[in-house]
Length: 219
Image (cartoon, rainbow, N blue to C red; front, side, top):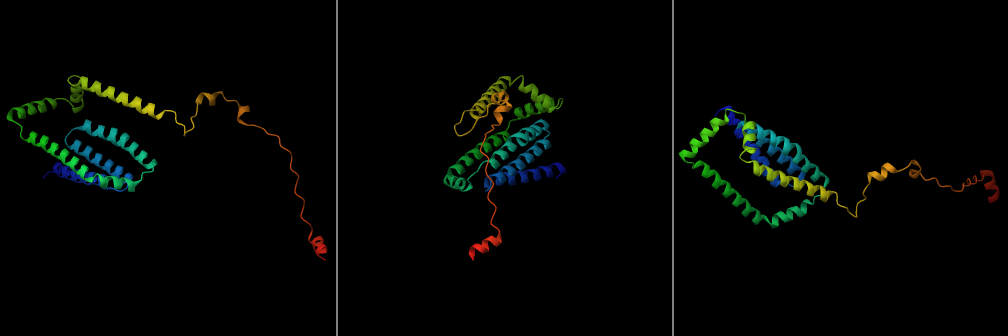
């Protein structure tokens, strides 16, 4: 076993452990941290497969933006872990059935790749040989903007609509919050910030009686 194969098994074992801890961790913050570890190991596996573009996108997009946002949201929200555990136990068999269906679909697709014909192997070899003449990023860009241009545009429109919807939902008027208008803050004058109220002067408290005078009154 060479060094590359050893690193592959190492990254795969850490990836499987992190993925298992994502769904079994009781603390949501710990689950997000394990998900970050899982994505980092997946990025390392992409590097071993010489897919540098996918590896750097996985690090920049998911680790650098999405999962950090997830971590901030989970830390700011008051998540009831006990109720989540009860919900998971109530839907455990449905989750097991759903996971089994996904596993069977993945196995069917992978086994179909192993049963490839000689013609498909020759085509894959020709495509791999052509891809070696250029970088992975250039080959991916040519495919995205030539053969898959329409799906890329559709995905861009969907992401644009999702971004506009998220902004609209965030900026909606709520009665339980106090909105601040910047234009009112700019037009405010110094005299409106401080209100001077005239009140009557208070008289000082009378001094306490002397100790000798207090004893004479007692006598």
